[in-house]
Amino acid sequence: MPVVREFRLPDLGEGLTGAEVVRWMVEVGEVIAVDQPVVEVETAKAVVEVPCPYGGVVTARYGAEGEEISVGAPLVTVAVASAAGVGEELAAAGVVAAVAEVERPLVGYGVLESKGGRRRRVGAVAPGAPGAPGAPGAPGASVVAAPAPAPAVAVAAAVVPVAPVVVPVISPLVRRLAREQGVDLTALAGSGPDGLIMRADVERAVAAKAAGPVAAAAVAAPVPAGSDTVVPLRGLRKAVAEKLGRSHREIPAATCWVDADATELMALRRQLNAAPGPKVSVLALLARICTVALARFPELNSSVTEDGSGIVRHSAVHLGFAAQGERGLVVPVVRDAHTRSTEQLGEELGRLTGAARAGSLTLAELTGGTFTLNNYGVFGVDGSTPILNHPEAAMLGVGRIVAKPWVHGGELAVREVTQLSFTFDHRVCDGGTAGGFLRFVADCVEQPGMLLRQL
Image 1 (cartoon, helix red, strand yellow):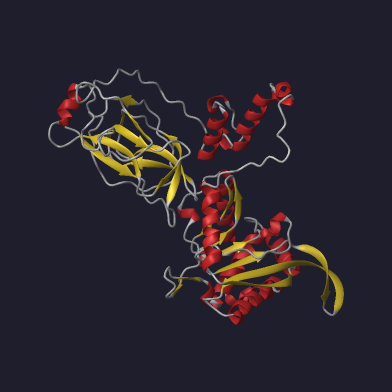
Image 2 (image 1 turned 90 degrees about the horizontal axis):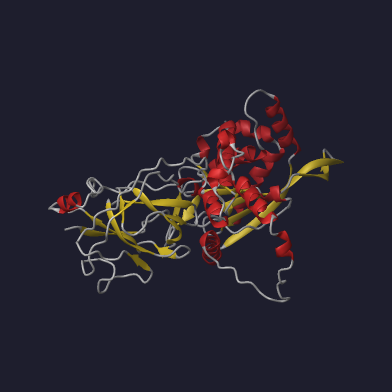
């Protein structure tokens, strides 16, 4: 007889307690293979497809699309082949090799692409079988179960295999947008590299569809004045709210700031970019300055333990930086930033920024940061007092670089000036250490030649 296995939502990343069901990729009664993705979920970090470690017949699935599932809660139950006899029963039912592989360790998680292929269904296990849907005491309120056939395993219906259509789209967010808006991806011509379908392509298709019924939309009733709209706080926004709330409650943060003359730094950038090779961004130069400053002030590359009893001094600098992506503001992480040259930092920052805009960042690229660089100057603002990215102990903010009157060499001149702000956890250091860090960063911005002393 089949053995019913329950697959629960695994831990998808550090600090994550649940995930929202975006799309079910299998139906109840469908035969699945080991490690086949069964559901697409959205966490605070990314949209991922979750593979099931069991091969067999899906007997139940838990949670509707849009519902949040907690880590450790049931996702699906699968009737897998037992060592004694179920292979013969399935062979008699015409589904030989559908559950040839019974169990093996779960593969690593990440943003995966669905494998094309036909789907087959067989009947679910009979009601009353241990763990079967509908059995007394079976958990889960939102369970979809297959109707119980008369025999223990029903014969699978014949399915004519059809060659899968390969759609040139990578981002799961683009697929989700197309699905929600009813856009057929196979009918689109992508504007990205090698015909890759981008979000803008889907949005243009949606706009074209909406152009027809403009007249009907014009006579729609207006929203009553004064009516309020409640937007559910879930997914990324919920996770961000919880993390920032925790940071604000637990971390005694303080902020100091200073104006810096960035004229020489900008001149250095122009000089570097005039030479052959990859272009160097301002963010890459600031990242290099941060790694050098953290080597001088290692107290700031740290975090406080969960119970508050100690301070963890991190040996490596994993530099997070704020980037605007399809799902809002995210913080990708440059691993081992202290070992990279300015040019290497620029290449990795560019790669991660592109992935953030495409919505293709992986969990590994969004976790594990030890220090954050926040260039809010790209939004045209001068200053900010950001909340720390828990559990990190420090964050450097950089405002816009703009021409301002400035006393230089004892005379009034027009210089390129920026404001640097530094927020830190007062538990890991005092104001003298934080002030020393910020002053060193400002000095490197004003006199970038100082970096040569650290090489």
